[in-house]
Length: 312
Image (cartoon, rainbow, N blue to C red; front, side):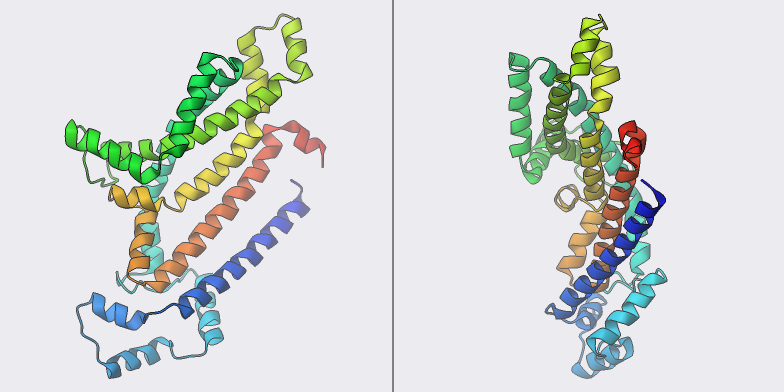
């Protein structure tokens, strides 16, 4: 990626973030409910109408829409997303506190998924249309079909209730509490990635360089792992970027099932309590993560595939 392309992408990120911030603020502004009443109710206070209107005036919630939006956007540019109505803490502080548990869950899930999907995808491609291929494709079809919430509940029933090996409530602080959420996420992801690896490897196996390498007597494992697999990485890296962005944004269903203290669980709490400041900060966080990871993926193409550098 040239410097001009990098600057162009950064400008696009800024424009998209501004657009997302406007839409997010507009939707929360039009949403039913009163954030002041929500905030007072969270403290156990039964608000009177005079008190509600007084606090709304102090918080600037009676100002025109664009006045509120530009004030909020200016604060966001300084790293201030406001205070959470339900938690009575700064939004940035809440997001930062949930970042590390979500990051650990993301890394563990993706590592587990790669350990499963890459060998299975390669094996399925090498033994195409054999019983091994049919078996792998059957398992991937089953894994994609299973909803995350059902797989999570089934794993919880077996390993937490029946055999009592793992804790039901996941604190996010130790390794054991991360096993079931990570396995639940890895089941669906590894199924999709196995199919993607199989497709990419089959496409590379049909190339002329593979035929030439085999004709020269190069060992089959060298052809597969030193030639075919590196050339199959581009679509895999693209999917990894999307999956990493999704996981870092928080996997709400899985985190709620296992009571995992991540960003997804925080987002569900914000939505159920109409915590608009927290919702707005969370949406901007997800948008920034996705665009930053997509930019990193595009930059990584130049290092993974030298042909991309030749196209400059």
